[in-house]
Length: 265
Image 1 (tube, rainbow, N blue to C red):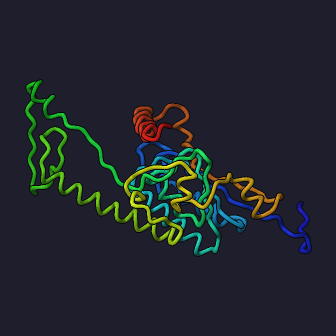
Image 2 (image 1 turned 120 degrees about the vertical axis):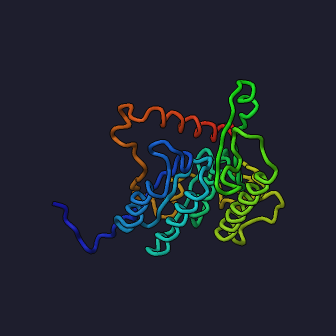
Image 3 (image 1 turned 30 degrees about the horizontal axis):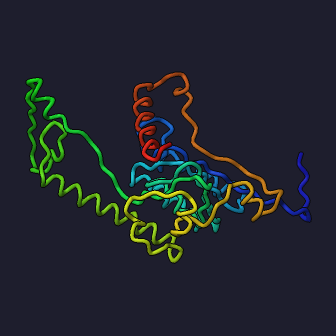
């Protein structure tokens, strides 16, 4: 039985939430708003934490899932009056930076890669291969844009124009999020929203982060040497440890590895 004495001061506790990997990939354990909702709820609500620290290590992914997760973090922070501090590890790029920007403050390692405030869409074209193999592509639609950017048909200028319009709108949403969260801290650099990436020192000068620091010493500096840490994060489903859905997880793993490789990681 634990004796509770009202005159003894309770040591502060920081909830640490790990946000690692690509966002919205198909593999099990991938970051999504649905998967992270119970994790974030526990982190913010259990034991009245002095702060929530985000360990961010993500090359990005789905803009929608990035927005949903970031919005959930902000709602919980404001509802419960709990400050949020992000600590970037290897990379917080694209959607990964979107998540970091949901925090009130952002810190990183000297060699962390940050930025990539842009939007990308990639695919392939296989119509020449089909023609060489003597395969005829047959598509029937109701609606002239229903088969937009079919990878088995030659690319159409009007399809590309529609896609570019969609990407531009998503990019504007991203820019608005960063400007809203970082405010007057941002530098007026022309290349801030071009999709460029920087190491932490340069990112700090641009106003994308608040400084160079690591989680434990920074939290001890702010809340005292006796601050406690309570960790939260996604766990792989029990059955996935025994080889379930290997094909899906393998494909998702390759996609995630390719996303990190874009930043030399």
